Length: 285
Image (cartoon, rainbow, N blue to C red; front, side):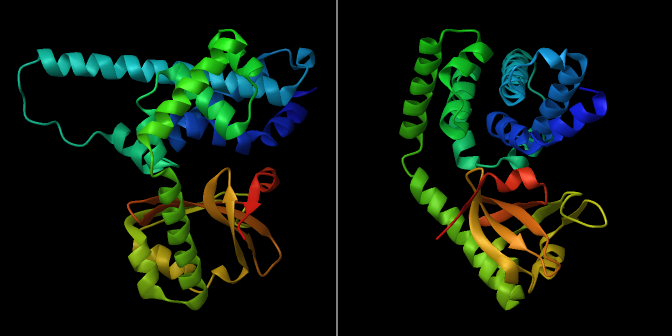
């Protein structure tokens, strides 16, 4: 397969790989880096010897994320050691990296619990429970037996369930926020839109969703005015398990839109027109 055809094939898997990496890492920015690294490794490999490209890409992306988690854990441990041993200095201010992670988290409540897991537990749980990857495949990623991979996921599952007893209530609350936003958008209710949006909300529209190319909008006022009256063709849905909507524009284009909700307010809206995203859409009755 020539490079152009290989790149086209990779793009059909990008949305799923990004969803996997984003759930494991808790950061859209780091997920972008992981997916790009997966492409670089694919482009340097002998793709003709790959029996199943989706499985190969999932394995490689998982390994990249695992390395990133371990590096993050080592960095945090080093930072804690410095904080304990160094003289007491005034706070250095905001941590941009941590702010970015928190801002881009897809499931903030779940992410808090995932942070308590080891990198291997976190990866096993996310791949198996959220993306239905087999224990045999997970075993390859973590370098252990399938039985050990099963134990990792089981241990992580118990900790997640124990640490998030109100998970279903949280999910229902996030769904309610999104439904209220869609209703306010359809009705042109600017005041309600502003109440539901975080002041620093960001909207990201990719190139496949916008004729004029991808773009971003920032700030509650701008986003509320942008969405006022725009949700006429929106159907509530779950996209990769995230509250969202399937939208049909007046021109007939289909968009998959996801909402990140924290503390009762929407902090991010992501829209894509990539056909691969529609395969992971579950309409909400």
